[in-house]
Image 1 (cartoon, one colour):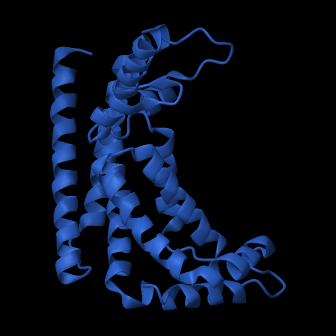
Image 2 (cartoon, helix red, strand yellow):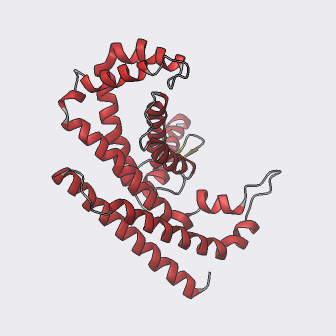
Image 3 (cartoon, rainbow, N blue to C red):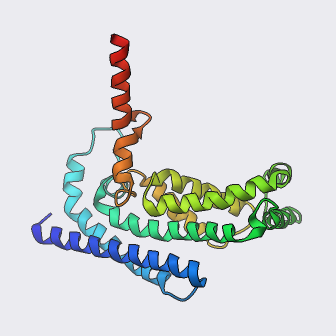
Length: 260
């Protein structure tokens, strides 16, 4: 990448991330204090997403040759464009904007449930939700499949209090994990799981959109949290097949004691 293009990319990336992060914090504070209002947060993130996408493609155009050259020799190599977006820091600003959208939606949804007594251990709202889903199981064209209706009837409904708390705090945990970029791929994966359950229960709402965004975060798990805590967590923790710094050191100490 030329020096001028590199400068443009760096400044653009910083600007997009600062605006998206600050506006999201203000949006969360506004909603928690005054309830949902017209703060233009959604349209602003869409505009920032477009800018971040343009910046990412500019970076990709510069890095494409190097990505092709450095590709591992495999029978079915990964395309350079997917390696760029899902395995290199070049698109980190794009994933940061996506994270702000998905994370804030989950956090605010969970916090709203925390504030509602009907989402407590009596699980009034969840019981009504399950009853509505079971009603969609009947008819010529049921919106809820039989196996899932059985799961709701025999597992969720008898343990509604537990599942109500699980959903409430699960949404908060997913939102915080995605917003902070802490084990982002895992947090987004749990978010997708909840989205699928809501869809299987016949509730569309924003679940297809948020679920799709979260699925992309799962695919980009290696880099989507780099502008966040994952830049420290992933090197420290590593992976089951490639232990991070903490586990490598513990393993070396264990091996030392075994030899002695």
